[in-house]
Length: 79
Image (cartoon, rainbow, N blue to C red; front, side, top):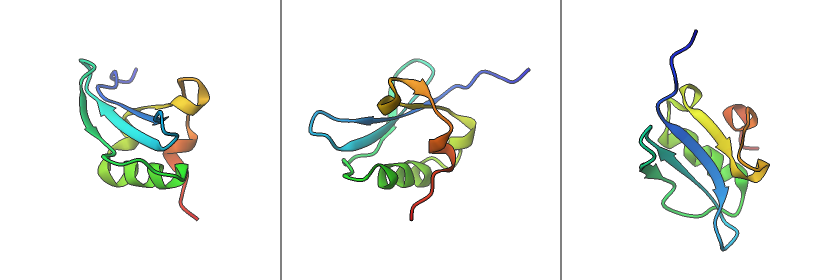
């Protein structure tokens, strides 16, 4: 049995259509975010990986997939 994941990374589109990410603690508070919007989803994922080197240990949610947990943002690479 694995330990519950304490933080969640969420990849989403903002109202202007830009890609963003945020990291929430187990209490639901945002503790870090992209700080900017990205036109390309891959760029947002790349920034998320750089800012969160432990991303593989976190719960990952891709809002573009209707809030389902996805595996592709774990390993998606830039071209």
